[in-house]
Amino acid sequence: MPIDQAAIYEQVVLVDFVRQLALRRTLSAIECPFKVVSMIPHKSSFESEATRPPEERPLVHPLVDRPFIGALVREFYARVRKDPRLGPIFASVISGDWEPHLEKMTDFWCAVILKNGAYSGRPVPAHLRLKQVREDDFAIWLGLFRETVASRCPPEVAAVFIDRAERIARSLSLAMFFRLDRPTARAPV
Ligand code: HEM
Image 1 (cartoon, rainbow, N blue to C red):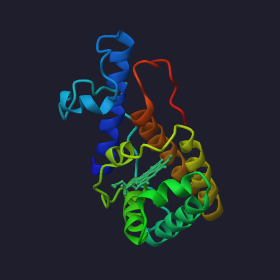
Image 2 (cartoon, helix red, strand yellow):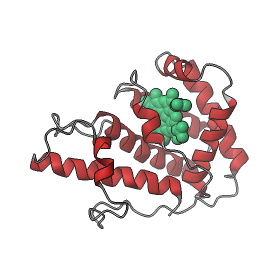
Image 3 (cartoon, rainbow, N blue to C red):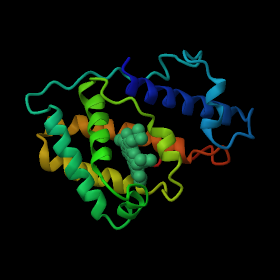
Image 4 (tube, protein in one colour):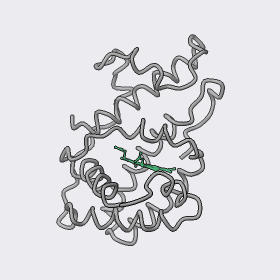
């Protein structure tokens, strides 16, 4: 399993694990799912057909290669930077040269779409550090992403990008905002 998918899968399993604990109310002291990471073995016994997300295949399409993805990423972040809510959040973290972030995000999307293992970072800790982000910001992020993808991709390609973005956004949002004292909270995206 490529690293990006393994990391995201681990987080989905983890969130599911914490939800189960919440429902059973056996561990009410845990506030944040990522405090229990170390309790979970790498190949978790919670791994099952019920929690395993469907295997994603590489997208094979004549249009979609690294230059295509790089251009899409650049247009998306140009929109993000102009957005009155998300722009300042990014500006507070990326103050100088955007190129390293754009290259990293191109690696990330290549790994997610082409399954080429280009990205080896950890998105969840990077987002947990962003204290100014609110749950509703994910809807804005996804709106801009959908607009960008729709303007550049044929529908069958757009559908793959959007489906994967929605899944990862849901996972990230749960990681950031799920709390045991709101066990009925839905995934906010
Ligand atoms: C409210 C929505 C979001 C906000 C405000 C946000 C903001 C940010 C910021 C400011 C960074 C730079 C962090 C740093 O350099 O320390 C970042 C990194 C990143 N974001 Fe997001 N993000 C959002 C949603 C998403 C979503 C939905 C995805 C994936 C579909 C995503 C994927 C990533 C990745 C892969 C990184 C690089 C992490 C790393 O390896 O350092 N983000 N994000």
